[in-house]
Length: 232
DNA sequence: GCGACAG
DNA sequence: ATCTTGTCGC
Image (tube, rainbow, N blue to C red; front, side, top):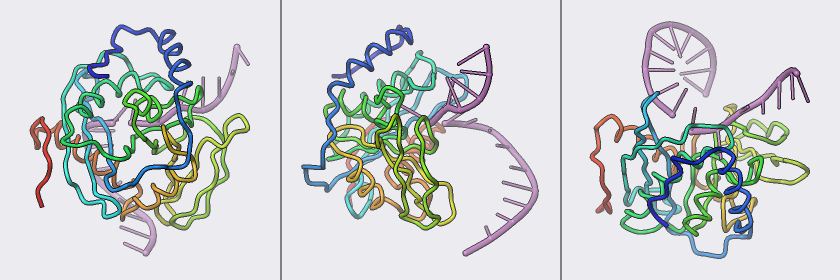
C-alpha cells in the first residue's frame, strides 16, 4: 500500500471508494499497548499543487519527539469538503512508509467517522495502512452537539444521524473545543481518553500540533526532506 | 431549492 | 490551508 494516487479521480469515483472502504473500518476498544503515538499533517502554499507532508513520532505518555518523516509531493486532487483524504492520504502514506519505526497509534488532522459517509481522513488512512488512527479536527464537518463545559477536559457527544460518531473536547479553559472521532481500530471512548492525555499547554493536542509546526518549517525550508530517529 | 461545508 | 495587524486576557 504505497504511492497511492488519486490525481485522476472524479469526485463521483471518490464516493464509491469511500463507501467501499467504510466496510473495513473497525470500531472497538483499544486492544494494543500504547508507547508510541504519532501526529500527521500537511502544509502547502496557497494555489500550489506541492504539498509538504509529515508524521512525527512521540513517546507516550511523555509526548517527547522520538522521530519523524517528511516528504514533498505533487497532488492534483482538489480540496472538496468531505473528500479531504483524496488530497492528503497519498503524501501522508509516503511519509508513513519512510518512518524509522511505526507508531502504535496515529492522530490525523481531520475527522475520522464523524463524516457524512463515515469515512473521514483518519478512517481512510487507518484502513489503507491497516493501523489504529484517531481524527482530531479543529472545526465541525457534520453532526450535532451541545457545547461542552468551559473547563479543560470537558466533552460532549457528537451525534450524526442518531449515532455517536465522536466527541467535542475542551482542551483549554474557555477556548474553542476540538472534534475527536475514531478513525480505525479504536472506539469513541478510548479516542477521547487518549486525546485528553495528549493535551499540553495549547488548544491543539501535541501530536497534531507538533506535526503542524514541523511540516510548516519543512515547507519554509527550515528542515530538509527526509526521515530520522531522534537520539536522546 | 436552501444552507453547510475537515484542510 | 495560508496571509496578516492589532487586541484582549491570563
